[in-house]
Image 1: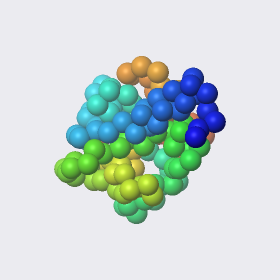
Image 2 (image 1 turned 90 degrees about the vertical axis):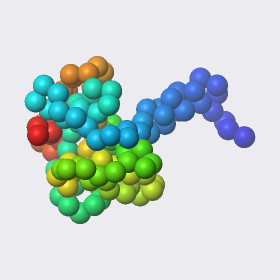
Image 3 (image 1 turned 60 degrees about the horizontal axis):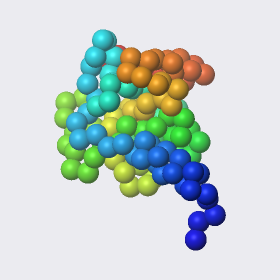
Image 4 (image 1 turned 180 degrees about the horizontal axis):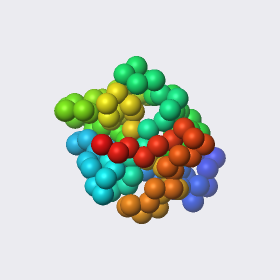
Length: 125
């Protein structure tokens, strides 16, 4: 039985849903940058080795930088591929770089994570 109160449990479930939002189609270009299906800016992480098929962003990192999850049955296309995360979920990658959104971007068009810690970058196709 969970020791979380009803409010904490609801927040926990809401966060899990937000992090696990699934996209059938890869991000698209809008206003010179890539965005996910909700129109949120997409980023790459310098600590991810291009074309390695792996993400180096888990745990607290993935809470702050949610991966752009590929829905089951999604197909790679063009410059887009799908890598497998440690939890078995697919994650969209662009030109071999795994893709993420940023928790501090609150509405479509926000780019608050660009150049964060000099390792996060908006994706410009």
